[in-house]
Structure formats: C-alpha cells, structure tokens
Length: 325
Image (cartoon, rainbow, N blue to C red; front, top):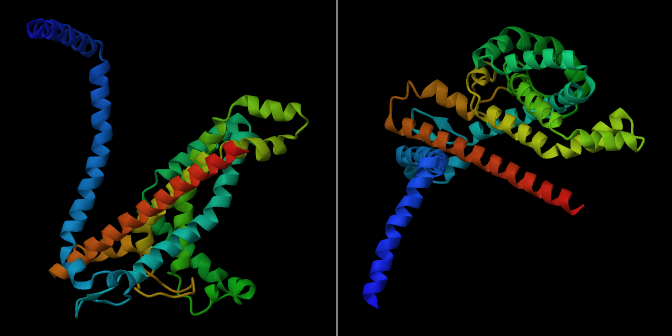
C-alpha cells in the first residue's frame, strides 16, 4: 500500500513540475513574482527609512524622551532642544495653504473638466502641469521678491478688516507664517487642479446625461451629481497636496523667517521641521544636534503618516456613507 502511494506521488511530481514550468513559460508566475517584489519593495523601503531614523536618533530619544515633542526651547549651546515650535510652524503653514488652495483648486478643476471648452481646458491644463514642475526654489524667490512686498503693502488693509482677530496682530516684517502659507498654497494648487480634473473627467457620461434628462441644469448636474461621484478622488488630491506642503523645504525656508517660536499671529515669523533640518544639518557640530535633527525627521515622517492614515479613514468612511444612501 505504501509502495503504491510513493509511486503515485513520484508520478505526480513530474506532472506538477510540468504545470509549474508551463505557467512560468506563459509568464503568469514570473509576472506575479515581479509585481509582488515591486509591492514588497515599498514596504521594505518604508521600514528601512523608519529603522534608520530610529537608530540614528537614539541619543536624542534617550536624552529628552517624550518631552522632546512638547518642549519649545532650541538651545544648541546648552544642547537643550524641543520640537514643538517646528511642529507648530509646519502644521500652521500647511493648514493655511490648504485653506487658501482648496476652494481655488477644486473650483478651477470643476471649470476645466465640466464648463470650459475643450481647447481652453487642454491649454490651461498644460500650463497647470508646468506649474507643478517648477522647482521649489523658484517659488521661494518669487515669494521673497514679489509676495513679501505685496503682503507688506496689503498689511494696512488686512489690519483694517481682520485686525480684530488674534491671527493678525503684532508687528509684520514680511517673512512670516502668512507668507509661507501663501507660497505653499501657490505650490499645491496645481496638484489639486490636475488630479481633481482627471477624476472629474473619469465620471461616466451616463451620470451627466441622466441628470440633464431629468431637467437639471448644467451646473446642477455638475454640483449635485458629478462632484459627489468624484468626491473620493478630490479628497485624495487634497491630502496628496497636504503631504507635499508638509515636506516642502526650500520655498518655506526662504519666506517663513526661521525663528523657533510659537505665536498666535500669522504676521510673526516661524520655523518648520523641513526648514530647520535643511538649515542646520550640514553645520551640526555635535552628535546630540545631529541626533535631534534626525529625530525631527522621524517626527515629520510620523506626522505625514498619521495625516495620510486619517485621509484614508476619511475616504473609507465617506465611501460607506455613500453606499448606505
């Protein structure tokens, strides 16, 4: 009995080998292996980045612990560091950029996808894609020589209309959180417009035709049917732009003021995580300062990860609500 089973298994082994060789020859197994390795490489690279950041920030983590996230002192002489001013500057400038970029970006995407003639839409889309490819240092130079003087000239009008708010009090020297927010808004608008336009164009034409057949106007079909249908993609474009603004370095460094302080006023200078790493890492003379800057990089990585995770949860929740209705 055992001998027959062994002979049967031996007979099946060449057959299995032939089936595997046939699949390999057809390309299915090889293709599956290649795309699996490509996907696994993403996990490997992400894990490797986290490991290197964690390993090289050991001195700072052991010295300051969790108080590093809540400390506001930045004293390289006495080697006492806190990340809160940089976290605050990063979040405030990114939030301000989104506040200005979302209405403009989504509105422009709706116009280009639904209302503009195809010739105008294609021409403007080409220009928008060019704006997305402009190096950040160019935006920084434009911020210094164009935006900052414009904000200085507009300061009296801003104080006259919004001066009762705590966000627009105190002296204004040009370089500030407000200037950094404006520069970031200009930089992320092309991303929102380009991606949102493609998502809107991907909405099936049947959705538009059905709304128009029921008596809806062009704008009603766009706002009530097309935009909700493409909502997940639009939200994804917004959070992609947010991830870009969180990690932006050169343009922000040139206009934010590079002062590690926390101020309610948007007129005050500030500092971001990416800017302080770019400014001080090359000249970090002590091991503790280098470790602290690397830990700041890990904080920025974690901040980006949390925001992207929140975006994913928001998209899933929105999708479930839409399916439920």
